[in-house]
Length: 154
Image (cartoon, rainbow, N blue to C red; front, side, top):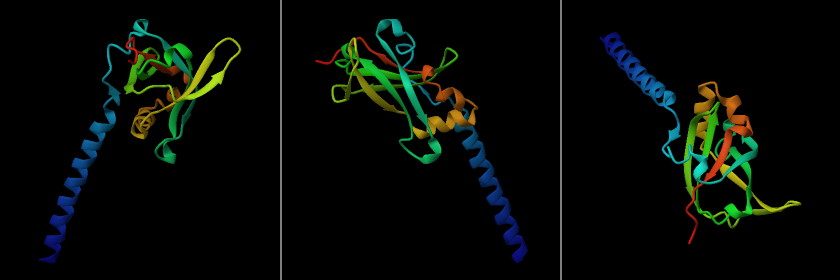
């Protein structure tokens, strides 16, 4: 009698674990975020700045996946921009950011003023790149870009 009760609990537990594993597989195979198409994939409508350095260490927890960008001074007044991550021309991640870059660190270059901007990517997005074998591509700064919209702050 007792064996029967444990057997049914084990079967029910296995079914629940299999359902969670299936749901987890479905979530992990979805692309992270591409909700800013087609505007961000058309950089000719605005300006674009590529990352100079990327830090990708999602195993250290939140705020350990980000890119550092040198943004030209004329783009600081723009309050809406998109962070994009593309691998071999295919857009894998896109996130709209609506904030001013006025309060960023200013860096003086010989020819022009540029601003250093740190833009974070959620850890779950980095884990998606890791699970899909694209973590090496995520580490390359050439795959990261800030695409600025033509809309300027008022």
